Length: 610
Ligand SMILES: Cc1cc2nc3c(=O)[nH]c(=O)nc-3n(C[C@H](O)[C@H](O)[C@H](O)COP(=O)(O)OP(=O)(O)OC[C@H]3O[C@@H](n4cnc5c(N)ncnc54)[C@H](O)[C@@H]3O)c2cc1C
Ligand SMILES: *[C@@H]1O[C@H](CO)[C@@H](O)[C@H](O)[C@H]1NC(C)=O
Image (cartoon, rainbow, N blue to C red; front, side, top):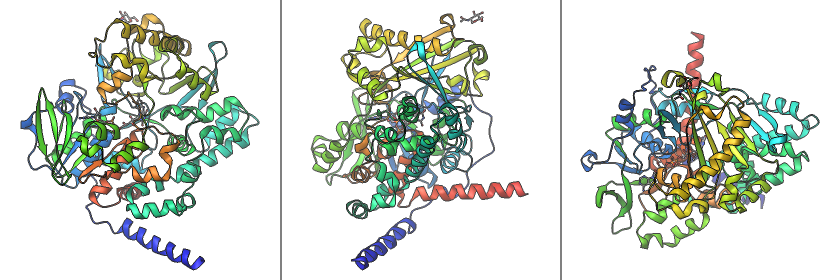
């Protein structure tokens, strides 16, 4: 028996090594592309020349190698990888500017980000940092948040307890222990578990890259759970694991608060996903210098240099297929007319639901293999963002480069269940969970760009159903009832903010408005207003889901990229692009990024010695 297992294992190892190292495609990170820092461009007109290139059939380059639907980091990132190996790629974006969740908009002179508040894993020489440096020719810079970077506020207004969260592998537990004397063991054990679980994420990426039969072999033999603690812990809920560690309800909440960054309350969250987010910020948190639109702004020229283009106001209304059911192009709606564009491959960053339910012809959508994948996925949590423009500097208003997570109570499962069960008018009266941060205070270039002003962004969850009846209305003019409902959410959220930030007063507010789930549906094409794409609950981390939902689709020459094929977040969606690039270029780009990071570290050490 042992001999058989040993033979299988040896066979497996050889096969894996061959697959992993026997790569044949070109490496996008071959050459160091970083250039000396140029002066940052703040002029709106100059920036729009890059970010807002409107679609015209005449602007479509000839002899395309690929078409990418959607200009989020998953789409642009992949386009950059392909451009770096000389491919001519067209990226099509439905909104009027490029960037997806990384786009920014300006109202009354205040610039706001849509979906980037803080990003982890960006220490110099860490793989994601090195990749982002290469993707932007070294022009994208990151500003660290303060330490503590997060503050958790628990309880009702008359009894709010505040807990600071520090980054740093030793600082994180040390500071928690100061807040929770007697809980040292629970805190150490929590950290041990999240690290061990988070470290196992490599297998999630591998399951999506390995040939299907091999990945299935790992699943059905149960080897996945032995090879990686990630999959061992994936079926356990956050509530379950944390419940075993401590009886202290505030500490349980502090261990769990980061669920807000992926959307599943502790009873539904997988401890594996939770571990990833906790470890994500363990070495610090950063904000893109100059705001999140710097990300697309510095990537688009790389795509153009290889002959490609990034065009906006280009809504793809269907993917084109030939007789053999192979993707061969897309159709873009231009007014009432369809413009057909051909390419040998089509990649979608628009998410699984949009791609399969809106962009495929009915008969292909009905294919059992497509239906099977659709049967595995669920829409993620939708939400609400409130954008506030303030008169005053960060010093005057007491704003810092950090975030507040404010919860009306420490039992998050109960809090979420109660909130979700309410009628919309009731829910609006009392928003029980709120993320609050000042993007302007995080950005060292802000003072120069908008002297004397500041911004705040508030984020909470909100049910799509609460707003659904207005979904077909016109943006900016959905009627008085919609406006009233938005105002009710704004008013109750503002109460919380004025309490947590005592230096902010109502007379300082120059601009305030809210984006609802139907706003998300409009600007980022999230079908039900989802913040983070496909639901990140337990089911998503079943090894079979992890294997089946991969860049290759059941349809030839059609691929998926972005958050739905890996995980949410800037780095999650970028990892999705790495997965997709691996499939297309037939090499393991994750390993390439690791060796890129090693090279960067070596060359930097050499520079230090000299
Ligand atoms: C409010 C909010 C806060 C967040 N905060 C953070 C944070 O602090 N840190 C972090 O790391 N992550 C955060 N995230 C998550 C992160 O922004 C996303 O997970 C990630 O950017 C998703 O990238 P993507 O490329 O997969 O998708 P997206 O950025 O959503 O891009 C998809 C693009 O496809 C376009 N599209 C869809 N259909 C079509 C079509 N038919 N034709 C043409 N174009 C189409 C859409 O318009 C969109 O631009 C946040 C998200 C939200 C919403
Ligand atoms: C901003 O505040 C200053 C005083 O602090 C005031 O003079 C100015 O008029 C205010 N601007 C607006 C637009 O309210």
